Image (cartoon, rainbow, N blue to C red; front, side):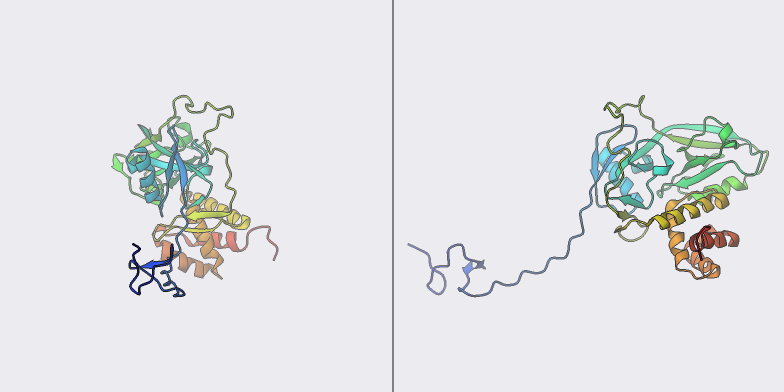
Length: 317
């Protein structure tokens, strides 16, 4: 015996059902609620720079969240991560992860290795250090000037994190704060740096392929889109910078190093954007002061930035 519907008719075989009852023929189906447009699922591959299996991470919007995701994959503390490089396991300061990640980039995390202390005597005003930070509380050495005080100390290396100055911890300080502390140290008075070097692989362990390269090393992102990480708010997909914008950011980064002893590609890109939208040096100074006042940029530096972005040498009027 066949079961019939409420109106005595058998529901059409395979026909739509609503609340367990077949709909009348010709009755339009109720409109399904429009689903919100899903954000693209971005998955990145990662390894520990000294050697590890490959992990997959997603769902981060800033550097701290990125470190937390990497730490979760490898079962370590986020505070173990000193910095990350893109597409190479080497301590290559030209490949540092900054505010943007290409969609095809492979992320290598450099973690804490040995701690060392070195005594330095400041015989001249400049130590010869360029400092940057990882965006999560660690300032580290990005460049050592040839022939400088620090260059003569063989135990100090590019990539070393500065953990303390004279037993005063500087973990949590931004790079410009650390650079200022070092500049203000008196001459002829020895001081101590406590440094943490990145953990090293065991005699190039893991490089057993014919090419001798780790996965992703040397690869260049094929797409123009990048994931822009922000200190506040969600990460966004955007077009990569144009060659002229990249060159302007390099010029501003060089100015940051010469005036302040720091390098920061993300900060340089932010300043390029501000300069492009400022018709004069005075307006650029006002704009920078409103968003980056803690840096206390000198007026001559702001003028150099504006000139480097808006009137670079070699440009035709």
